[in-house]
Length: 248
Image 1 (cartoon, rainbow, N blue to C red):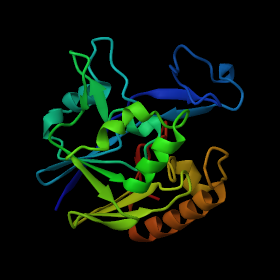
Image 2: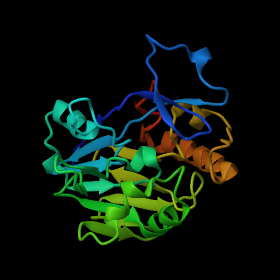
Image 3: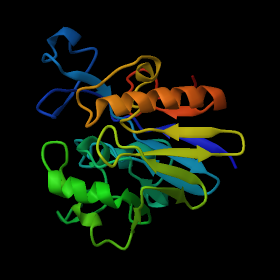
Image 4: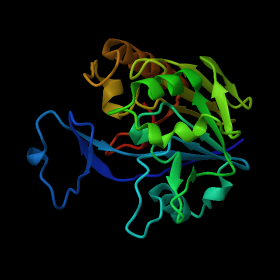
């Protein structure tokens, strides 16, 4: 079983206390001009092709291009993948920068799922928490369509998707955050969402103020770094401006 990995970068953004994502262009903007306390982050869903399966991890911001095309659809087509081929959409959590592309408004202004031939895998507790919590971290309009959809498979705390993708409820960044491990014949791929969003955070003891439980996230990152180094995992980093994919 071979695993092909495709980063689907939506660009670099700054985000501050207002939880608003502002595009950042290194040729036009100065780092020092960012609001105090803001972060510089990449937004980067990942496509994994495993044999005949097309698996999407998280769905980006859900922004449209000037043409009106959903950006994640555009990014898939750029690498030669029709969005209709996506079989599985797997969500680490439902914060708006990870769940924005779950659905979109079509040309008739009707909201529909962005990947009509996919099963969406979502932690049910995370869904319920997101509906209750709402703004500013969660945009309910991004994911409320999942509630009664036949395309959803609700995940428990821990388990395996199709005998292929191990998942576990880690908490840390938000109470019901999920992390994933995909074991291929020659590769082991780890996606830790916002518990392990950047390479540098796996190399330092770093407590993030934006985490629900910063200490737990830090401890999880240390655990992942140790095990990932021992087992030669391929790490996927959703928010790393420089390193989308890396070994430790």
